Image (cartoon, rainbow over all chains, first blue to last red; front, side):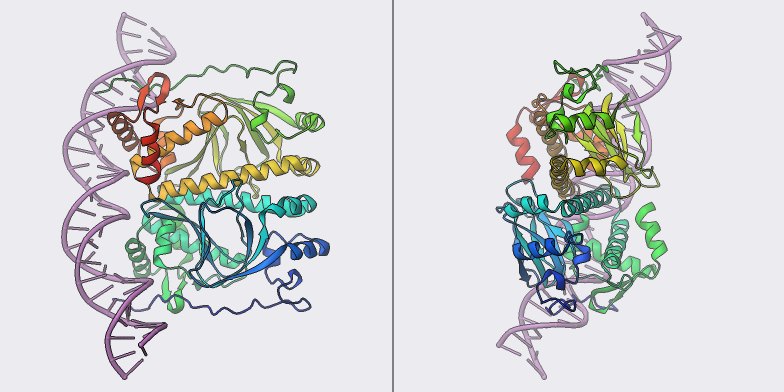
Amino acid sequence: MPDSKNVRSVVPMKPAAPRPGGRPGSCAACAVRGLTVCAPLNPAGMAEVEMLSTQVALAASETLFDEGEAAEHVFNVTEGTLKIFKLLPDGRRQVTGFLFAGDFLGLANQQTYAFSAEAVTPARLCRFQRRQIDGLLTRHPEMERRLLSKASHELAEAQEQMLLLGRKTARERVASFLLLLSRRASQRGATADPVPVPMSRTDIADYLGLTTETVSRSFTRLKGDGLIQLLPAGKVALTRRDALETLATAG
Amino acid sequence: MPDSKNVRSVVPMKPAAPRPGGRPGSCAACAVRGLTVCAPLNPAGMAEVEMLSTQVALAASETLFDEGEAAEHVFNVTEGTLKIFKLLPDGRRQVTGFLFAGDFLGLANQQTYAFSAEAVTPARLCRFQRRQIDGLLTRHPEMERRLLSKASHELAEAQEQMLLLGRKTARERVASFLLLLSRRASQRGATADPVPVPMSRTDIADYLGLTTETVSRSFTRLKGDGLIQLLPAGKVALTRRDALETLATAG
DNA sequence: TTGCCACCTTGATCTGCGTCAAGCGCGCGC
DNA sequence: GCGCGCGCTTGACGCAGATCAAGGTGGCAA
């Protein structure tokens, strides 16, 4: 008995609100610079980054790159949501992460990408030539330090995700996921409580190591137990955040 | 019908073979320096690192630190095998990684460790004060670069592990695990084919998101199918590596 | 040598989640 | 305005792996 629909939120591709005093597309105008690896750069560094970067826009479900492709670029997400995932030859998919404004993407010490990347919503990114990154980081150690910090943060998140995938039940996984989305939303200054859930049930399932059916049933049950509410436009209200936290971390 | 026992290999705690020309415990004498973050250091850098580091020895199953503890140190593994893991309050455990000679340990941008670390076999490590690391990396950008490279490599491995935990069957997980151990052994110059498996079935289960029983049954079945042989002292022969590869990556 | 204990293996049974199947509702294209 | 299709939900059923239980075996201490 469905009562509220879970409609994919259709975010129209609008330009990021530019900061006053910078021309659109410039780093000075970048609304999310404080979230990115560019945050610690001085004006000279920003000018250099700006010279080396180009803008990319993706429509929803458009591919940024595929696993195994030559890794020629690295990216900063400036707007929208992406997913990164790995595939097995028979089609089994594991989404290893969702990326939001401020996230860095493309680090790989191999010559090819270790995962595919695809837009979940319309998205914008800053693109750099991989072969220019070494020099850039050498000239701007503050940026390299920031990148290392981001990488170690991601490593901690990856371990949290391994705990989820290896040891949590379906309900616990979905509760953990909603809390993660909410936390990340507030980190980047978006609304954390009715939390936007822009990705499909299939994407969520592939992120949580479940099937869409099980994800759907878990949502239904969390709703039935009064822990969450499913709102229109793919938003979810965390009615009882405390109970969600307990469920996510204790069982 | 057991025919070969899977005995924990008991590695006596012997000092690492020192390089000729360096006093024991010195970086010049470090047999695994080429594998560590110290690899790119020049003699002056090595001298500095040596001043800042102390040696730690652990017996098998001894704890290095616990999740949540104040993160005062970072480490280089120089000898032996460690495991790192996270726990849920009810005791469910996820081993998020096994560490071998050359591995770096303790990166965290929080003030506390995000996981626990415990010796699997007797082990030795180089220990640094966390608060001295920033300065060290600033003075030795080649070391910072190396650390970033290690971190991004770990990130790729973490994604591979998420694919395993989220989407592979028990058999596929065990095959993947044996191949991983073998690859890592050859990377650090150890024997890759009869591959040493120093950790218990329980540790393997907690790494693969399974139970000991399922791990044991998977080993038995892989043996029955002629893909592996269980040798004494916890060694495993990868009789049909090709078939293992297929199983691990294709299903 | 003996006995204990930790670890491993194997068997029987149970169950959470996957699989298969069907129906609903919204958005979109015609 | 209408119907088609995709994404979501719900139900019935099956199965891979968990759980429960019972040995086997080798290392080690006394």
